[in-house]
Image 1: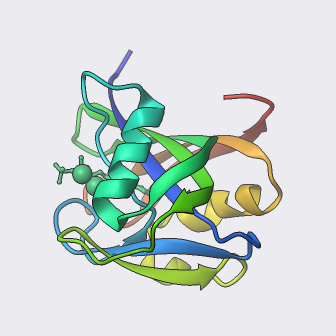
Image 2: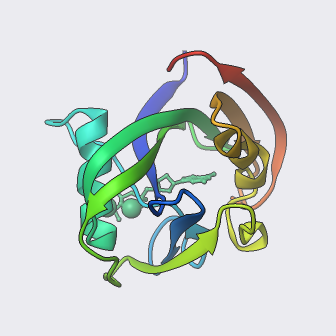
Length: 159
Ligand code: 6U4
Ligand code: NA
Ligand code: NA
């Protein structure tokens, strides 16, 4: 089987669950895109701990309640290592969002997402989040990291 590297992707929601915090990535992979917060899972931590750590590092928010909502596998043309991205929702946290070296945070309505400024896969699986359905998806991106040529996506009972 193809080698996978573990990542997290975290979406903080406000208390009414009608807005979500995205960050404009200022450097590195996915630069200039609006996305959830996250990154590589480190060797000494669980995936959930990695999600909590990345959220704090990149947004300043400290999680009080976190739940996994999805699992995404990204394959990039000419890259032998797939990205295994564990997607989380956070609906209770402490602190307020601050700009960091990596991310400029901004709130958006959950039904008014800036998909044209996000990764191309996001508009496909975000409707599962709106319906409260857990999901698993695979996307095969071109080397340009902009467009994908194939995908699979389905609802699952548990992750
Ligand atoms: P460094 O800068 O080495 O510390 P790190 O923060 O560990 O990096 P990073 O930011 O490169 O990792 O992680 C990539 C982030 O981009 C993860 O949160 C997953 C997310 N991501 C990658 N491909 C994506 C895609 N196609 N769609 C999407 N999020 C994606 O919505
Ligand atoms: Na990151
Ligand atoms: Na990081």
